[in-house]
Length: 321
Image 1 (spheres, helix red, strand yellow):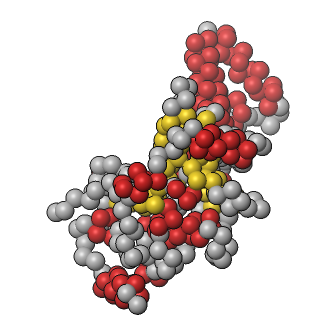
Image 2: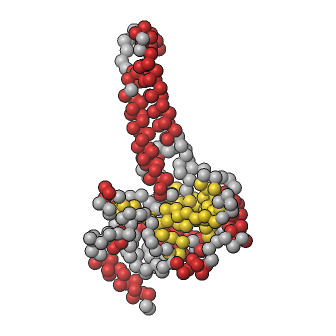
Image 3: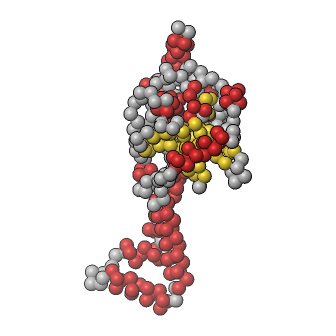
């Protein structure tokens, strides 16, 4: 069986120019934008959101462990006689532990249960992961991560396909996204880069035939249309899953994030630290004029459906007109 290029690494080998997505593709935003301003949108970063799912699951487990640790929760949730108050009940039980000499057992139960509860609360009360901001007014894509500003101009931005496949899915692709290349400076003033995946989780369940293409490609096309200030459909904003909604505290961009991103962008231009346009173009591949071109790489064990073959033929015919 042919192996997908994504079987053992999430990023594809090919690099594409962000503005090179064909305009004839459909639009789809997958309900995965988390915020919108006057001239900005905030796209959810895929990896922190996936990690948030795992942390939220752990938080639920910690809350359950806290509940079932008898030495602590017994005082709060157990039945008591109708003639004594809850406080009297707690005092009587504590006196029993001290009289019997069960100090270690009591303290261990208190400490472990409290620790699990605090861990759960720290996870649930953490801020929502900082998204990637797309700014129409200055043409930049940027965000702040761990004290460092990352930025790229959309007109020179590069895209890679990002796919997630694991052992549990028999090495089949189960998440489809795009990754944007961003730049920053290290402490020595040297240029560094990172690829940041953005897209909707669970888009594997979406009907490609009904949408008109790979959801991650259509999401990319929508972003390009937005940054090019074309008329695009209104985005949907919000949290989808329960795990997302468990994070009550909203994300927070620094107030001066835009000016810092513009300053970093200008510095990279002035010091000529950005890769040259010729270098970027030489390593980029053209985006195929087929909104389903990713299918055979994502699902190498399957035959390309007839409707995708017909769609590719139709796009090819339009290109030659």
